[in-house]
Length: 112
Image (cartoon, rainbow, N blue to C red; front, side, top):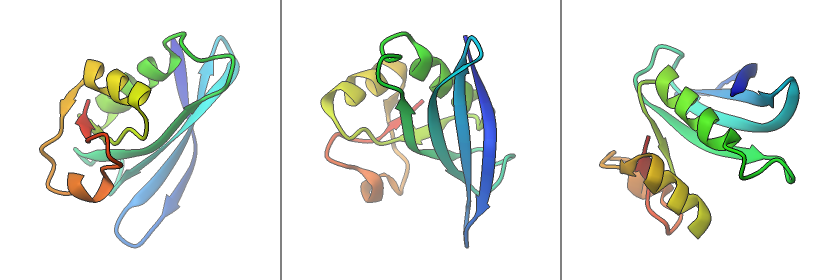
């Protein structure tokens, strides 16, 4: 199981950017950046999630996304490649979020 550690919160005009580090067995294996109004918001957008090379395909990213989804009662995420699209489609469903068209990178937007 992975552990998310909040590294920083950057206040923007209309939202906060939450920077997380992802750990597995005490070792940093990746990072994630989430945009939300606040920690109690019921909606968040995962701007980026990265798992270190050599640590991929071990379920760390999947577990981190599920934890982020639990924290914010659901997350939106826009894949930027076919592999990410398959993962997000497996974990969630296509999003009906009204702002989805603004973040779609050609592979749809998913809600997990």
